[in-house]
Amino acid sequence: CHDELNRAQKLLELTRQRRSAGIDSELQVRQAQARVPAAQQQVQSAQQQIDEARTALAALVGQGPDRGLDIARPVLGAGIATQLPSMLPADLLGRRPDVVAARWRVEAADKDIAVAKTRFYPSLNLTALGGVINPDVGKLLESGSVFGLVAPALSLPIFDGGKLRANLAGSDAQYDLAVADYNQKVIAALREVADQVTAVRSLEQRAQAQNDAVQTATEAFDLAQQRYRAGIGSYLEVLSVQEQLLVARQRMAGLQSQQLLASVRLQRALGGGFTPEPARDTAHTAPTSVQPNS
Image 1 (tube, rainbow, N blue to C red):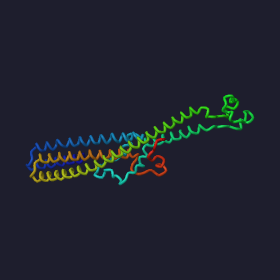
Image 2 (cartoon, helix red, strand yellow):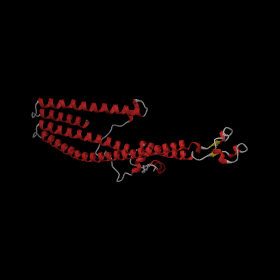
Image 3 (cartoon, rainbow, N blue to C red):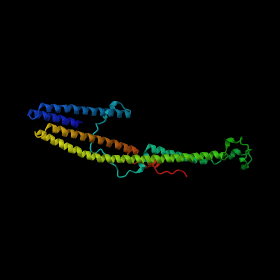
Image 4 (cartoon, rainbow, N blue to C red):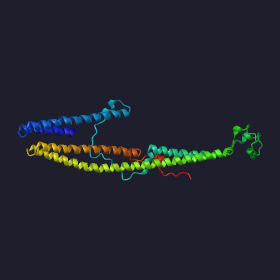
């Protein structure tokens, strides 16, 4: 926007010089003057968006509006494209919150199975039985045994084996569901990363082509100005070429904005960027293949 304002101001000055030399009329001067306020409005609109973004960022970090004043004006250049590494290991997905949560649910369900299995084993306090019940342990299975005297010390889960088997089956089912959910989360994460990598590469190619278009339009505008200054070209020619340059630069700015958004989306899909976490963190949450219980 600032570049367009500078061009409009320089063109206005050049047109005034040509009018003084008797080459252009007052009409061309008025036309050049009209483009300066239009360029100023674009600058003001862009500044308003920057100020709003600063305030929003300050609010996100829990600071007052003045905190956003420390944020420098963004500068878009040809080097803003995300540089993809030669390899993106799948272990990076182990940092995604949804994958981590699904993995923990699998581990929790696995532990529930272990707990359900241990409940099949009798827990018997033999010291509490001394002198109270017939030492023939086999009679403990008889309904006539005096359980009331030793209830706090005796737990024979074999008596409700049907219930325990149902609990174990339920734990197995919960584990299988947790595994299926985990695998689905990993597959969805892989698909999301693949889509964002494709977007980053596509935008990079489009930006390179558009950058060539901007350079061509800039050279054409410079040539049109030279012709206009020398009295060979017309003011209409300069306006036409300047309009082409403006459109090319706007498209380039749009592509650069899309590149930044694609970079953010890719890093979010990876769970935080291209750099792996320390081994002690990724070992627990790495998205390895999980198979349901047979």
